[in-house]
Image (cartoon, rainbow, N blue to C red; front, side, top):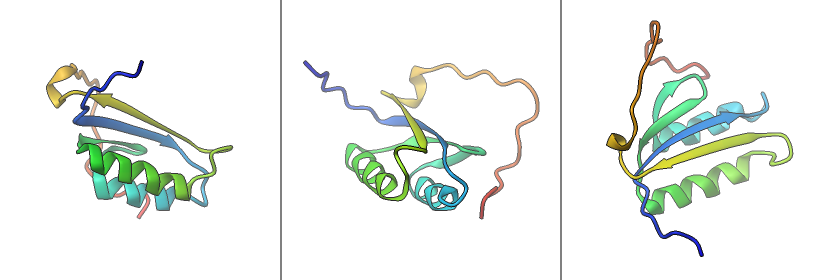
Length: 94
C-alpha cells in the first residue's frame, strides 16, 4: 500500500545529456531555487510537482538521462552542513 504523504519541499538533481540540459535547467528554474550547478530545491505544491514531472519527462531521454527528486515534508525536516565556499547564485547554463 502506498503512503499518502504530502511532501512540500524537494531537492532535484539531474544528469542530462548536453543537448537537453538547458531545457531541463529552465524547467527546474520555473519551479525551484537554483542551489548549485545541477541541483535545485524549494517548496512545491503537489499540483506543481505533478506538472514539473510531466514537463521534464517530455524533454528528457529516459534511456540516457537521470533526474532524482528527493521529497521532504518540510524545509525543517533535514539538517544541512556545508564545507567550503558556495558559488554565487549564477545561471550556469543560460
